[in-house]
Image (tube, rainbow, N blue to C red; front, side, top):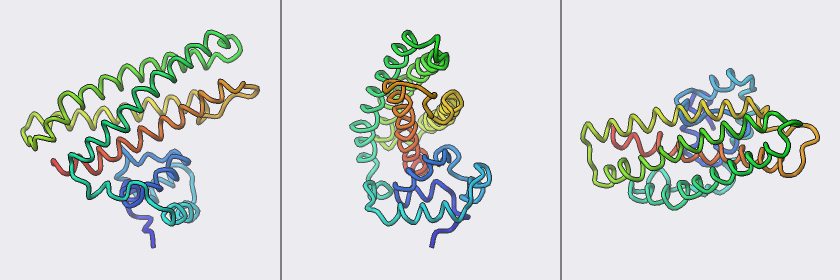
Length: 219
């Protein structure tokens, strides 16, 4: 039985499939992961019972990240570097280039594309700096089991920046009507909007592991 009074982050920690359910309903299980499922549903205007059914269905499927909570810190960091960081760098660059090209071609018909290009440029710049900080400073300190005040400050910076990225994705959703392509949009525009939704899901899963699995080990 799933408890609706459990924090939403806990659902994702127990089964990564819950992240897909929360992504579908734009429930923040990362920086707002401390909220209960009941509170999150109230905020989003959702029925708790219906969401529990979706979560139960997700829990019935194999969990691709079943070992995340018990994996050693070194394994979590190596996975982040090999999977999420590499994918994020490539995806951010690709989406920004797509948005710029589409804005040049369709800006007069779809002004939102120009706004998206600007927002994506800002997101990419900020996130690449964030990834550099993790790779060059934070992760080496964690691998060395450095529990100094300096390391704790780096962890606090990581969490604060995650919250800022959450705000940037809220802005992207507002611009795109929750990643819904405008009427009459061609396949390239639809591909961009779909890529933005997938990007938010990727970032959410990555930040969830850092916030709710990695960070508590060093508190």
